[in-house]
Image 1 (tube, rainbow, N blue to C red):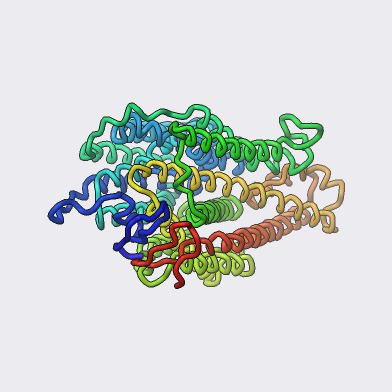
Image 2: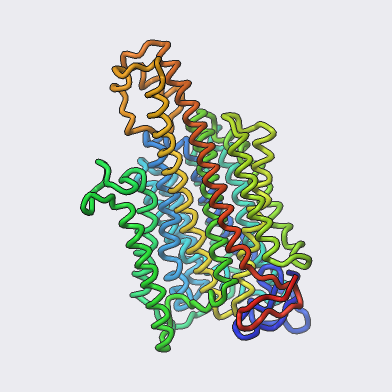
Amino acid sequence: MGSEGTARTGGTPASTGAVGAEHAGDATSPPGGERRSWTPLVCLFLAQVLMAFNLAALPVSLGGMVADFGAPPTAVSGTIVAYGLVVAALVMTGAKVGARLGWTRVFRVAVAAFGASAVVMVLAPAVGWAVGAQVLAGAAAAVIVPSLVALIAEHYRGAQQATAVGSLGSARALAGVSAFLLGGALGSLVGWRPVFGVVLAVAVAVLVLSGRLRPDRGDPGVRVDVVGAVLVAAAVVLVTLGVQNLRTWGLLLASRHAPFDVLGVSPAPVLVLTGLVLGQAFVAWTRRRAATGRTPLVALSVLGSPRERAAVYAMFVVVALEAALNFTVPLYVQIVQGRSPFDTALAMMPFNLTVLVTATLVVRLYPRFAPRSIGVVAFGLTTVALLWLSLVVTNNWETLPTVLGLVVFGVGQGALVTLVFNVLVTSAPKRQAGDVGAIRGTTQNLASAVGTALAGALLVTVLGATVARAVAAEPALPPALVAQVDLDEVDFVSNADLRTVLERTTATPEQVDAAVALNEAARLDALRLGLLVLAGVSASAVLPASRLPRYRPGEIPDPAGGPDPAT
């Protein structure tokens, strides 16, 4: 998909320009070939870096926050979940607020709020404060995310717009690399809190540069659909909370940790099902509102064809997989192995660098290969990489087979991050830029929250089952000793912490060594099975990827949404 594009036909995307071609802005280049200043793009690029750096810094800081707050890693991971949950719940509302009040104005307010959240992170005395800070950051990002697409559509046209929209994908990857490198170094040498001082500095830089954005008055005629906003926010919150607490509250039957039960059934699946029902109610309400001529919370026409819906499904899976991996690796490196944040940065570097390079260079493939071909091959790569990792991974992340698996996964991930966003942006006219941003923000952040929550629940559940089975079969650990340790509270702990717990029991040194060895084997088994499950999720995404467009530059797809021209 090169920079050339054709006209939009019958509501079906006919432009396949590299991320955000002319069609996405519904305009041609400025008269006389005038090129506009890149300064506004630098501001918007850094705003994307701001959000991505904050999110990537959370797993890097996992070990430091666990030690500082004295909280378990699954509780600290609530900061990641809280951020993604709030963005996903509020981004559609944020898009309409931006359109009503003016994108530049709300963008500045949101960036200031994001900076305030970084201040709270730096000063947080307990994990609850950190979670609250990420709630504030999520609310700010819910406005920034749709602002980026809308402001790019406002400031750039033609090839410049294609470059500008494409930069968002590389900004996200660049922030991931810098967060792991800088965050790892600061976390090892100084502590985790200065990492969020960097977030504050970037927020200040964005505020200063925002003075170069074109002011706008907004459209007072835009109305916020309050009913739709409540429905989508409730749906997102219930689904995310339900998924996050599947292990703690019970997969089916309520555990003793559940806050309540529904006739003995765990509230976790009940919340998930209720959220899904509310999501369907939101879609029905939105269609009804649009049919009566009133402005809906989001224009569902953005997802009007199977190809556009396939792009959203693929985006959800690819972001969820990335979030799961970004949670799993730091968990093992910092908590299980007891290594430094910088070691985490080194372990993740092959993946993050590969994502950055691939996300930047994959646009060169667009003129030669259709989105469907790239998507299917990319998901094939992520599936093979996860299967390979499940076979070769050990407690040492620097082995060549492990690095190779992370590199292959990064190639597939980087290609998909840019590709699926491109399909959505090139499908929508300028007036729907905010809606595209809202769909992107909801999908990415809900997927990030769900991916992190599912990874944590899956790994801890598998670990608990593995430990219980191994303890029962271990002759060196008699029942009298096992009774002194609460196996219902099994979580990921370092060998040193495990030894500290066992020293408070009647265990002999030989029994302590046996328990540590058993725990090491159980943790590795949990990791391998978790990677195997993620491989299965990746493989299932080949189906929506096969529904992505097959057309290439200059080819006009069927306006009815039927089969694309043959590749």
